Amino acid sequence: MRLGEKEPRYMSYFLEVDSKRNKKNIGPPGLEDWENARTLVKFLTIFYMVTLRFFGSLHVTSNAFFNELIYMHTNLLQLSKNKDSVLSGMTMNMMLKFEKYWGYEVNQNFLLYVSNVLDPRLKLKYVKFCFSDLYDYEKAQLLTNKVKDTLVSLYEFYLKIDEVVDKNRHK
Image 1 (cartoon, rainbow, N blue to C red):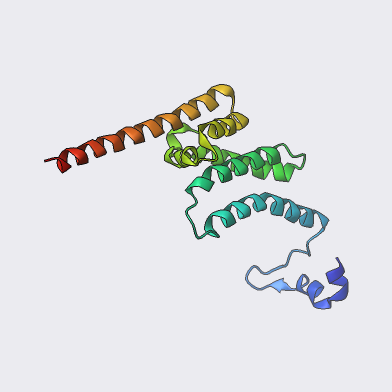
Image 2 (tube, rainbow, N blue to C red; image 1 turned 90 degrees about the horizontal axis):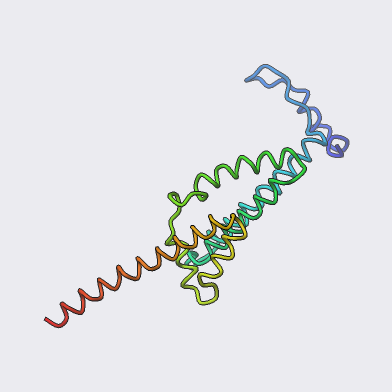
């Protein structure tokens, strides 16, 4: 609004006819447009922060993956309950995408969770705690067991390799 008062060229832009469409440009952003922009910024901030943590790092981020996934899921759940229909609508659409890629056991790479179990600060209890914060008891238990099974199968795989190496070393 103030820009229109201070800068006459700003308002004249909206009076011009767009040569490609042969129509006048849509008027300047109103209060509702600015509110929608603020809402969009709230929504996109979640993804911006996660992106910065992953791609702004020069070290391995596999141990941070789980925390960022939980951060994103928790914030999406919170925003989906927002009274603002624009924000909750965007969030619900994103939750559907999130569930598509991370909500089902078949779509998940449980090796990414194993890195948290191997982190001395976190362990399996932390993974279980986070799952139980996001899901009902059965699903949290199922996902925790899948992480544990992945860890055990990884251990057994490397144990077999170690046995083969020992066998070849003693020949």
